[in-house]
Length: 333
Image 1 (cartoon, rainbow, N blue to C red):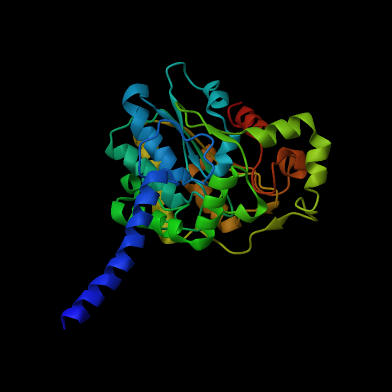
Image 2 (cartoon, helix red, strand yellow; image 1 turned 90 degrees about the vertical axis):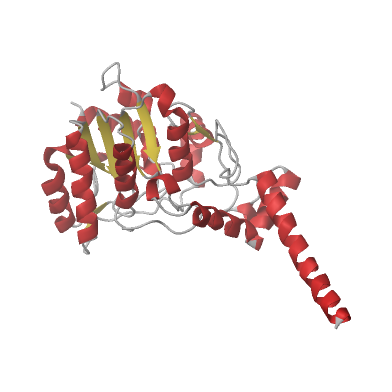
């Protein structure tokens, strides 16, 4: 019996030690930058959770900066630079990019509710909606890249951290991560886990800048698009989304977004992104958005001067800051 207990204890210890080592290595490397404190998240080589960065940067800086003007939306908000937006605002307005990867109306709604709970004054808001992302979720997102910060979702911090530790334990991630640590350079097999672009985040406004791609387009535009000619597929004619997306729960979120903005007497604009796909929002969804936001809504979906020119895009998902600058001129005319 004693030998049996000793054997069980031995094998239990063998099982525990690797797990302890994994926990220690996870804390030490903090690959997703969600464990330790950081003042700057620029040049992250592991693809980060943008929602966590935005919420953390707001919490770190609000007491010093007193933000009162916010840009909400998915990664497409990178086209709307706070510095460009500031030109249309008052001198005392303090801008902040409060975005998230794959942001949904749930994410925008919970961020505005969070600001309301903190009694943050909102002078201006720029909300970017996207046909393919904004109304996909009515609740917290799944996966470590998209799950919402516990401060805004109101959900468990333990569950939040568990998502990242599970992602760390993924053999494909570990192979890509430690290969990068050893090699010190990006390789194609690391795609989906390691960032292949130089991306900076402004430590005050949280503005995103994709350095390499913007420089390459500016300096060698013909070569940039020639290398990606298979990516930029040919569009035929404008299409209309045949299936309504906005459900009753999301209608409530939209009305709450409007309520909070109007409660603050905020000057706000709601922009529907000009996506390369050239698909118009479903007519029923457009009517709902028009009913809610009226003249504050600007629809750039479908076929137009922005979506016709491939040089307005980094790839078929993200449009460039020059497009955002042009849209700002239109909506603040």
